[in-house]
Length: 217
Image (cartoon, rainbow, N blue to C red; front, side):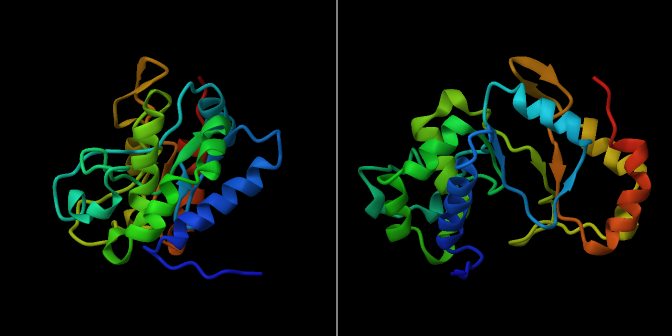
């Protein structure tokens, strides 16, 4: 039976947990990535596969934001199980290993708190995983996302890139324009995916793909 999922509602997390639970049924699945229909890969499949399978950590962005869209969304009714100092915010788009995915789908303590007390403008998809993982599994988390997104414009949604904005130089900058840590070493490959790209940008993405997506280690 199909169940409706609403943007910003706690049933977004319920849907993500169901997706993970179904994917976990295949024992060959070792890494789990959540993407949207507006995401694009920045590298070819073999590079992305090697990056994920060789990684020693998962990728859930989590940070403490003292603002109305950070700590301002905390509900005091979650205390003492989740305190405001433990409250975190981050990207919905995650990547995790099998061990962490099992912990997420089996969580019967913290998730019900979000079901009860994170509603309306709380946006559980931006707070549940960042808070849960930071509280319980910090050493296993890289504390960053693998999906690049542009929040430079004010608003509740990030910038959408239309066809004229997609250039060879822009895609190269997404691939190698940042610095981060990967398996304890400095790396300029920090993002494997990017969003949001409109459907009309597909032709240009395919045009540039042979030039920018293939990468030899």
